[in-house]
Length: 328
Image 1 (cartoon, rainbow, N blue to C red):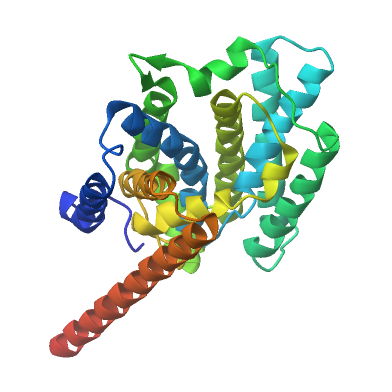
Image 2 (cartoon, rainbow, N blue to C red; image 1 turned 30 degrees about the horizontal axis):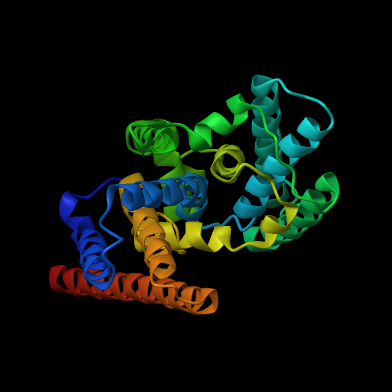
């Protein structure tokens, strides 16, 4: 197991420092950044990415990936839209249907990986992403749908003194997920499955069930994000299924310390990463930066974070070899 716990506050000083520097630069660059309304806007933008990143982190810890989270969120929102268009107005029922749909999609992703033995989650989740893109367009008739019940929109739109309730929900979820990952046997099994699959097998842990749980939870959190997106925009749009939401989620996790090699990552690091991504997006908007340039910069950020992780792993491995040689 490479890193199952927080490992000290110092592990996040670099990411926190980058966030602080980014905020200082944007404050200097535009007077509109450091205003209450804009900071609340950043938190609202963070919410959607942070929710997707929750499930993405679990998949990354197991050395997997879920490229369908953004499309899943859009599909769940479009499912609600189709039902509303058909006359359903019960917000509780709409939310339950969306959550069940998202979880089932995640469960299918996990089953394709663990029971049908597809070679890598990249294959199954990329295929699922494209399937959900088409399904989202199909259920909405390739049209935007609005007029959602207030109860459905509340999670993404309600505020307390301007502070978004959705971000409060994110904080609660992250605390619960931190407890799950660091204080339970299931959490230790998740890290173990990503850090050393052979050790997981020898420990008597059912790795297939652990992986299936991670992808099912990823689907559930995508559904929650989809419900939040309805409240933020007031509409659902099937065309959004192809948007790079999954890229933002991956970037948040990697910036926060997760590794594509598995066995690493924490909820605290991920929320910092999500704040970095949302702040970047917000700053680009305030500075009227072209969307193409935004995607280029985000790509470079991901590459830089991965290079940093690879370098850190290589240095740690070198130190371990040197220590082993000294003992010998």
